[in-house]
Image (cartoon, rainbow, N blue to C red; front, side, top):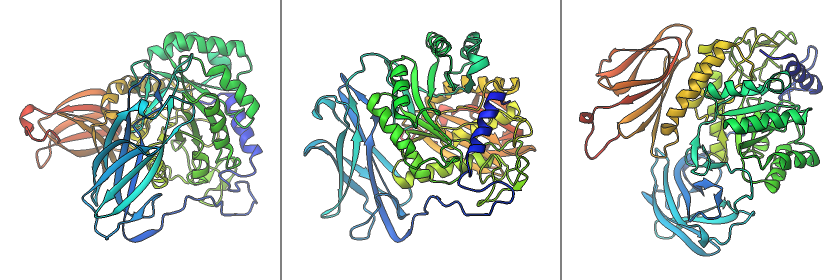
Length: 553
């Protein structure tokens, strides 16, 4: 449940904003279309070829010897960024790829192309071939040739930095969206709450010990930080416990001088994971360049940690605000909320008017997956799908404003599992303190995700998604094992048949009301689910199910 100070902060932002998501929302105000919608790409009459390249890891560091470029190709009938007509009209079977810098060839390889899927290849080279480590990124040229003389070209920025004299480095694996931490670059699945500071963390450091024991690995203290001595104590304790810091500058990021002071104060902390600048800039219609300007200041001062923002609106100036972030999060608060009528303002909510706490939502759990899917689609259209990651902000509050109650623990678990299946690679709920059953469910999920990450962040994993009668399933297959994230979005019982043989053995990482029952009609695994039932399971296939030439399901 929201604390008074946080509620007041939320109210002040609402009052100070003349609109929300650029919509009028007060009684008597006119209905004015908000504008700012993401443009739908024009359709082409013929297939277009998209060729992209990006570093495999960002950043690379002084002393590392191997660098890598991920090249990717696919065809589309939509005008994606960089999409080009295919010379000769026929889709080529493959592309001959060359990666260069300053005219010097770094790597070459061949990349498959097909009409129905994306193909990637990893091309490696010796990092010092680029030159010396430096703060300025290197520009890498990627070209792909096909046919007799056809060629498609693109470029990518590669970061190859000197090692910092102090502090940490958070790397990103741009193949999987994983954050890599520590000297061994271990993947981290970040999970932890926005956390109240005054009258909570600042007054009781033992809360951090509890957070660590509960399995969480990040803490996002919510400013303001009026007592800097208390902030130092909290951050020191987090460091001692091995809790990573998401540092929030929502009140200072628009002021370059204040932003500089905060970045310089925090950037050398060994447990800094990432920066957090703008909180819902689309809601308050901040200047369109505000996140980008802050991003540039932070990278000039630091450059070793990603920058994150959260967006509230379904579709308002997505490109402009996301340009200033490495990680973008939607906060889609749909539990115990009527998104069609605002009890706070006594007005209806439509795509052109109103503020109901969940912009353009339908009041169902699919609001969460739709928003994540929309973000992923837009990033792909822009050519940013690899360079910008997406996290989720599950609802962990209620009983204030638009929300009549907090979610139950099971509702929280469903939100989280659904989010991960739809691309979220970090979980940061709003807000702690939270009801005990929500915290308990979050703790169980945190411990499960520490094991599940070995599948989610394995570049070899084959991902499949299944939706059937409001049951959502994400599947990551590696060798003989498949990670299953299952979520029943119904308020009643449901069942689902999975494309796995009924003879699989199942290992539970977390389970809220999912039960294996029987073989399906074709010998597949079939499970029953309670209302809001959800689980994270690992299925292991017997060796007899595998062909020596093909170990995929």
